[in-house]
Image (cartoon, rainbow over all chains, first blue to last red; front, side, top):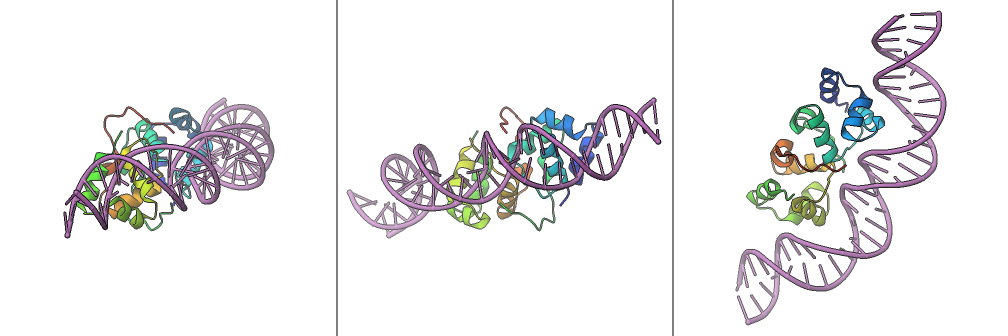
Length: 71
Length: 71
DNA sequence: ACAATATGTCAAATATATCTTGCAAAATAT
DNA sequence: ATATTTTGCAAGATATATTTGACATATTGT
C-alpha cells in the first residue's frame, strides 16, 4: 500500500523526493517506490529517512492493520 | 550494535531463535544475526518480528542514540 | 502557452539480504 | 559428567533491494 504518512512528512519539510534521497544517500527512484508502496526497504534506510524527517519508525512505517508482509 | 531489546522480547515470550524464525518465515541464522547486530534486515521482516512478539517498530528497532546507519 | 521542475515507470546491472549446509561452542537439562 | 538443546560463525548460492540511464507524464512558475 502507498505510504501516505511518509509523503506528508516529506512535503511538510518542503523536500522533493530527490532532495530526501540525497539526504539519506539513495536514489530518487528508491524514495519514489517506497512512497508508492509495493516496496520493501531496508531497516537502516527507514531509520535514515526517519531521522531526515524528524520522525520515528512507528510514525512513518508502522501500520496497525497490516495485511501484507512479504519477506 | 547488538539488539538487546529484541532478544529480551523474544525470551520474554519463551521463544528460541529458531521458533521465532519459523514464526516469521526466515532462518534461525537471520534472527541470530539481527540480535547480534551488524545486520540490516528488511522492513517487512522487522514488522513480522514485531507482530510475532506483540511489539512495535519503535519498541524493538528504534534507537535514540544514532551512530550507525549503513545502507 | 511555454519552460522548468517533479514524479512515475521500466529494463538491465550491481550490491546486499537471506538461505543452505555444516561444524563448534555454549547453555540447559537429566 | 554427559546428553540435548541453543546459539555463533563462515563459505558459497539464491533472492531481492538499490542503482543507472532513459523517457513519459504531471505539476508548478512565469
